[in-house]
Length: 350
Ligand code: ASP
Image 1 (cartoon, protein in one colour):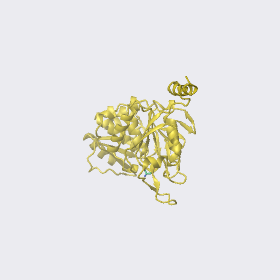
Image 2 (cartoon, rainbow, N blue to C red):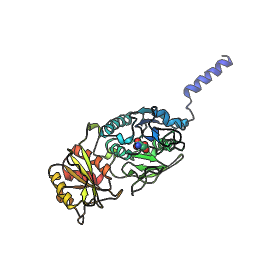
Image 3 (spheres, rainbow, N blue to C red):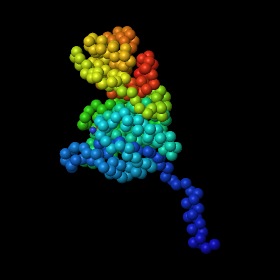
Image 4 (cartoon, rainbow, N blue to C red):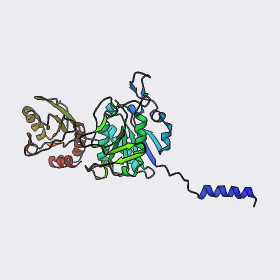
């Protein structure tokens, strides 16, 4: 055998039998929903965000090397500002995420989303997807093509968390501004600053600092595999509205036909006597009343000393869920039962 044949055989054999030295990339299904993270600017200086017609390309435009961190499959599911997202969008997204986590070739899912209602979508997914695989949801305060956008960094951090072994079995996680926050605690606290996506009083789960992923804690409220709800059984949701309380009054538009009503009450979910009498009648007519509070992040419980007797009225208190998150849990609860005691137990442990 001539030398050139030996060399050729050696090259073919090494290509066939040698394992590459670089670690295999994990596969991520990335689903885009719209919002500033995939958006452009109206013009260079205005700072005004505009939806991009090519959301996936805009997302990686800030740093194409992002694609070296994982094997990413892009899917644009919607391209809308998050204030337009309805229960139908949640159901469609959740079914898509369910399909993605059940595909054995995917290791994790990342969703990019507008920040205004990101907390609601995150909590819905947290309660309805049955998986241990990491599901990360992220957004940006400044559009992807803004001169100092947080879009690229939030995406890089999300990919790093999604591919980290400690991210599995933690429920849906929000990654933003170098922090990892549970879907249950995430809330948008500010309108413009880069730390807008924050946790309630309970705190963040951990930090992302470049390639360091540092988890400190985990949420033990029921989520994903352990939650009582499953997107496979959900095709639509009951109607639940939110009424805002103020000194002496309540903003409920009771002409709308609803199955449940969340009260963003004052203080510990308090409501004036006149309005309690109205709500008592609604509860008797099978409209479940859940008391939350307009005080962001504060818990409210039914105790012997509470000013409102939930047990007697068959009302439910929302623990520390904001009115918008309590609405999600009540929709899912009413999908299964009308029993106030059962609904109360869902609010105690989800
Ligand atoms: N209104 C936009 C949205 O929520 C703003 C943002 O993405 O931050 O989609």
